[in-house]
Image (tube, rainbow, N blue to C red; front, side):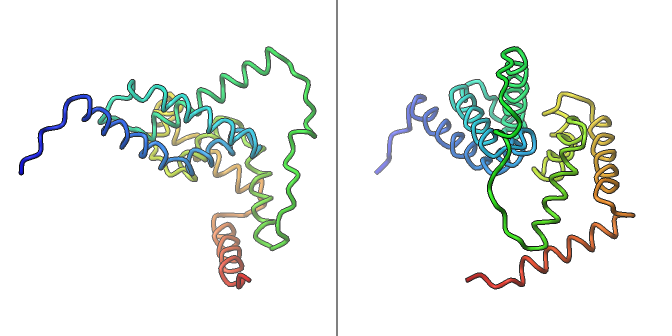
Length: 196
């Protein structure tokens, strides 16, 4: 028995549904990038939610065959900077204390290293931190990161290189060997601790 070919409307609905699923598959990477920009878990979640709302409501404007991940990261980045500009205009006067993360983290040695990394990242210029997180943490290629940031490929490579060098200095590492050794210690501690 032959099934009738789906109508163009049904095909568009199927394509939109699969595209929506693909958008949602980028959720963890979007959350990580949002956390690096906002440095606040709650604001990061709000930023990702706003990004997803914009992306899903404008999914028909996405050109199939282009880079969906870069499109989503660009929406997130633009939403973040729009919010920053809006806050400057509104001058809401919230104190820094109310925005700090008050969760108590675990006392393992690796959490101290992570805390040092977060502190060092917060001291990087915004453009360098953004480039480093896109390439290093979110896994975007240099080309994709350049597209997201709206700058040249060489500029992204330069920002990432400067950010890595400054991170090494801020974390007190004499060279990349110190960082690799510290990562190995943190990794072995994290993986050898039995979970109960």
